[in-house]
Length: 110
Image 1 (cartoon, one colour):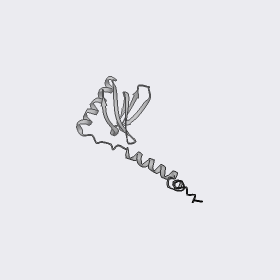
Image 2: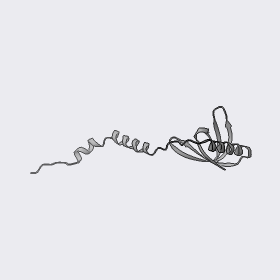
Image 3: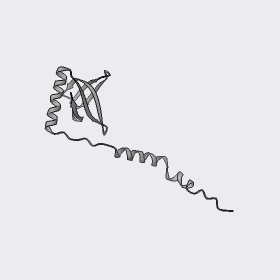
Image 4: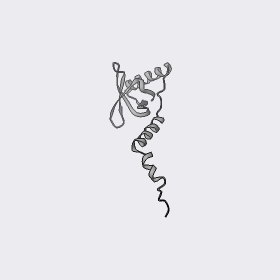
């Protein structure tokens, strides 16, 4: 009779515990994070002019902004700009109201 060795089966339970798997998933998710770029004065001035034009003439804009380490895109028109909290309110195509911080906006296209 030979030795009944289970080979890798006996070590697999120990090496791949649920905590280890969740740590690996978190690690790979953090690797995909994008760092927020800094805008220069020209870009900020362009954003300011575009926001003013969109509010005055109720033009539809597409706004690219930074949220939770990812880029987000919303298409709609700018409803209101709150100067105290530095946020804009955007009504998108589905009539949903979004509030976006000015510092998180990366680009606005008319």
